[in-house]
Image 1 (cartoon, rainbow, N blue to C red):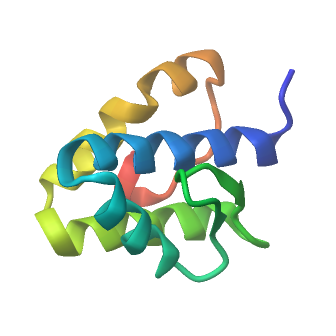
Image 2: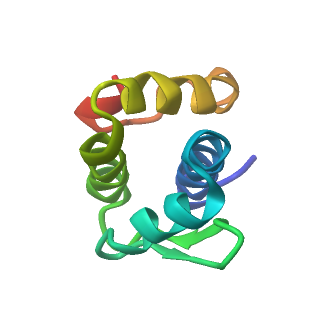
Length: 97
């Protein structure tokens, strides 16, 4: 089973990839790069969310909300639904609950 760090990285990557489908990968990655503590490659794959991945995930969603409002939350939740099914009980930021 994946450890929590890997699960959070997958969640963040899924959110970025979903946003890339909607707003384009260039903008999606540029927005993600603004999030403190979030480390990703130029394809949008996340490698690290820092010391508090829950806060970092929340900040990622907020960054996309600045661009597309509350619809960013819906797309983010949709993007991570399968990950959550396989990892019930994982703690999430308020924005994704």
